[in-house]
Length: 334
Image 1 (cartoon, one colour):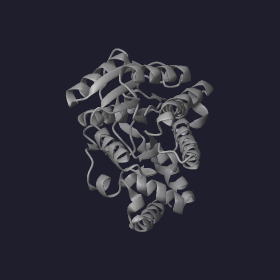
Image 2 (cartoon, rainbow, N blue to C red):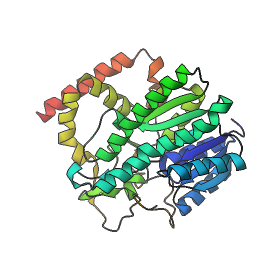
Image 3 (cartoon, rainbow, N blue to C red):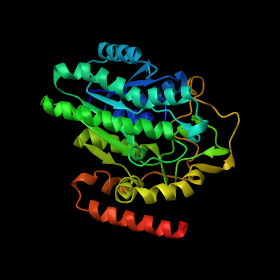
Image 4 (cartoon, rainbow, N blue to C red):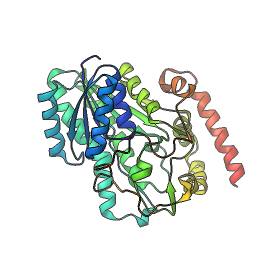
């Protein structure tokens, strides 16, 4: 993909930033879309260090007109867009009744509508050329919701519905544009440092936790193989298949364990940054990783073996294993 033009939203930190650097290592020209100036500058420096060309395009992904303008600028300065990765997200860690309407709206506009606006901006340009690849960064939570993250779970569910509709239309039109979703498990990203939270303790990814670079490898795999979906990591496979087999059991297990699993031992910091309505990394670059480097794994065999479940005959076995695990957990709970 040497010299291909790649657009990454949510590129100032986390999975978006790790993916941008991974594309750069292959020689791509990478357009970086996010709000935070310091985070974008840090990401651009890493892209150039990895061997790619970086274009910083400060944009609020929730603004459809701004996203369209960003796409126009990218094509004017870098050339035709070959790949568009929607990785921007926002969330609120709190029970449903403690989240304000404006917070629901904002999290939805960033996580769901931001991906819609990015997809539309890419399609308007790719359609006339009849080529290109759009990659949606989804989540296992798009299929198995958890407590304390209703806005995020709802947005990821919505993104699956939107993407499936679009896929049907592309097939109907015999389009050569490729469309993939990459569903992730728990990753050590800055969202747990700067996501809005009303929990008494510091938010954390549900263990086991992995580093963003493992997710970036999955995004590159999606580009190389153009699958319909990738389920990244054994926890994602267990959550999705387990929910399909026994959703009622998953409901009860998460009701008992989902609160504690999303909170670290340390109490919440009243002065922690908040990126819901304004960028947290405008003046400070928080980097790619969150604060859980000690607990996070760089990724192991499961990302190689289970990343693309669709070609494996082991999917049924995994489903049975997931069910057995849930049954064992249920026995411990009840």
